[in-house]
Length: 132
Image 1 (cartoon, rainbow, N blue to C red):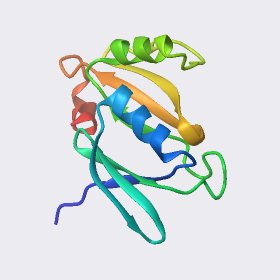
Image 2 (cartoon, rainbow, N blue to C red; image 1 turned 60 degrees about the vertical axis):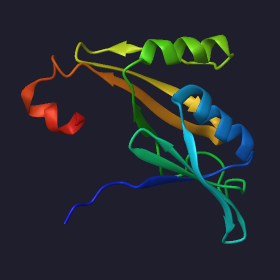
Image 3 (cartoon, rainbow, N blue to C red; image 1 turned 180 degrees about the vertical axis):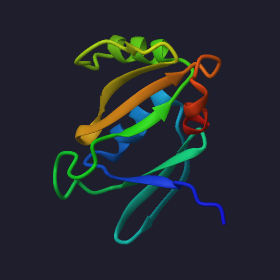
Image 4 (cartoon, rainbow, N blue to C red; image 1 turned 180 degrees about the horizontal axis):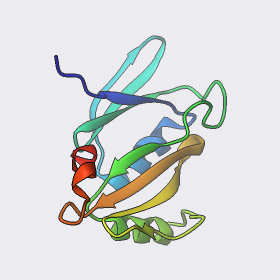
């Protein structure tokens, strides 16, 4: 049996701005846009993963029980520079741990994203499987 995370479900108070945010900064592509369960539902593919937007404001504003979700990239500086140029306020700069760089970035509806980049040539062998 093979298991994998299929999607992260996100309530969206302004679904169009959420779609544009993830398209613009992460190259997201809408793969399904339809109405079910009484609201518009949009699935967006980012790399091998997906986000599922539900056109309804968050029932419990804020992050609730979820602290953040991670998006791995191979161009962290470019995305961060683009965010800054578009007025996204970041609390600190990219943290560089040698083989791993990361920054926490805000998204619509008070969602927190860990944006990270890994240099697989420098990963300690015991961590290699974690970043596949």
